[in-house]
Image 1 (cartoon, rainbow, N blue to C red):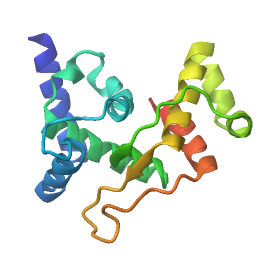
Image 2: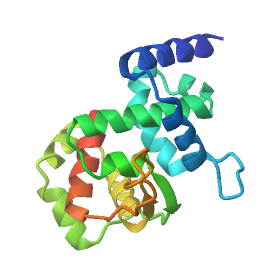
Image 3: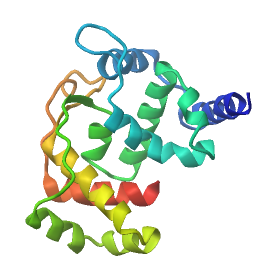
Length: 183
C-alpha cells in the first residue's frame, strides 16, 4: 500500500514537472518499445534497468517504481529523453528511448575502449563516487553492451523515426559515464 501511494505521488510529480505528455508520442512509444513484433507486451530488461537507474532517486526507493504500468514506463522514457537532451547529449537519449533491435550482452570492453573510458574526464568522478571495482565492471559492461547492440530511433519526427543509431564510441562512452554520475 505504501509503495503504491509513493509511486502514484512520484508519477504525479514527474507529470507536473516534465509533462504534459503528447498522447500521440505516448502511443508511438507504447507501440514501439513496449510490444514485440507480434504485438505482445514486452519491455527490454537491459533498457528498463538503465531507465529506472535515473528515477530511483525520484521514487526514493527501489521497490515502488516496479508498480508502474506500460503507459507510465513510457512517460518515464519520454522524461528521460527530455532530461538527457537538455544535458546536450546526442546519442544516449535516443538509445535509452529507442527501440532495441538486437541486444548483444557483453561484460568487457576491448583495450582501446578501456583506454577511452580511463581517459574520460568523468572517469575519476565515477571512481570517487562509487569506490567499488564491481561497479566499475558493471559500467564497462553497460558500455560494451550498448556499443555491440543495435537501436533505432523512436520519435514523432518521421525523418528520425526508425533510423538506425550509429555507434560513435567516444561519444557513447562519455555520455554513459555522465549518465551514471546523474543516477
